[in-house]
Image (cartoon, rainbow, N blue to C red; front, side):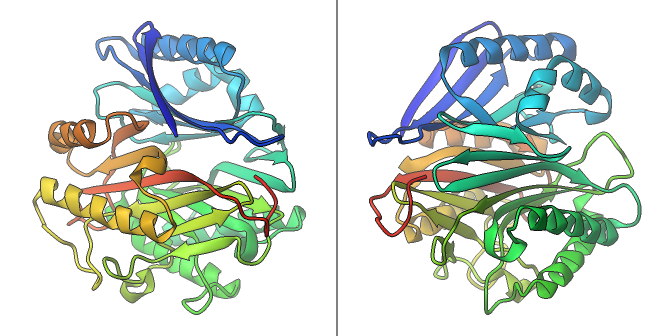
Length: 383
């Protein structure tokens, strides 16, 4: 992994992690985080600075964005201008927008996943297909409903997503790699999400004896107050049995079904030339399912890192292979100490720290990440 920080754009910094394989017709990929450095600017000024930096960056880098997520501090007021000013991105790639305020004081931040040598096509209002080699990658963003409680909305979102997958001749059970569930008022509405997701998974034969799906369930909302749940998802067509390997970290974490939820701690997707590791939202927890170090943000952060390290090691990777990190804090006052800890240990990795309470009040911090690892496996086609 090659890391770089670009500061030449006015008021905006770009963190970049790039993965290359020196193989014939091999896809390069990178993850970026764009941050507005001047928090005294108005939202309009911050957005203009972000747009300018993004366009200059894209002129210099021969990549295609396959998935983009914008983090906003006030989606109801900020989304219309974002869609207007970034209309070309919304029309050309899968875009997710969530109200999770960046905790560096800015009003907007941006995470982008980019590749070269790929072909991206819009399929409908929510999803894009990115194709290369033997695989088609389906990115879905901003799936939502605005009627009913959180359980009904979750059930209907999954129903719509399953139907969308079926039109592509793939399934939730065999092809969905990763989901993100953003829950408005997570302390109140998460129980409904858990109940509905479990019901959907049982219907599709996703059980403790088979597998679940790597996921993050976290506080987040859009511009519509009636939408209690929103979902982003990633699925891959062309996978063979054995290409998805689930990560458990049993020395440090317990199976999620033991405390009533249904997701995998992480998943490794194995290709011929590389593997992708998607680590779900992970917090300070032990292998009995108990919260560790309640009230202590430093020790919770350290235990969370330890848990993630175990999951990465199980997948044959480590923190040096991590291409992006998203960190969620329940208490905004913890931002300074957490930021210093991350800058000391992971100064080069693209990352963003957000205000987003975790699903259990005792957890002060949660993190998800994606890692990329070189492979030479002739059993599967190259990425």
